[in-house]
Length: 48
Image 1 (cartoon, rainbow, N blue to C red):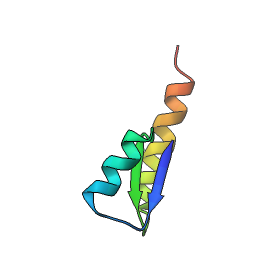
Image 2: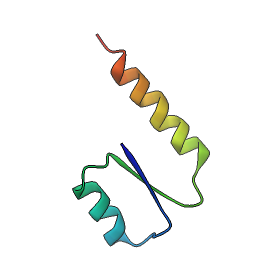
Image 3: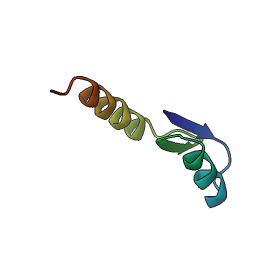
Image 4: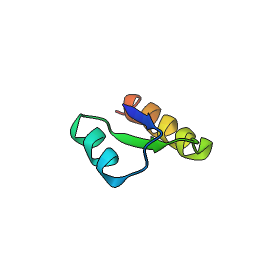
């Protein structure tokens, strides 16, 4: 699960990870980073 926030402070990142998010993105979203997350998640689901 991924979080998208307008807050870039380190505390916001840590709080989202403690809340159970696997990834934390700061607006404006880096499309390459999002694509990498999607590809990785799909590979994890289609594993052995």
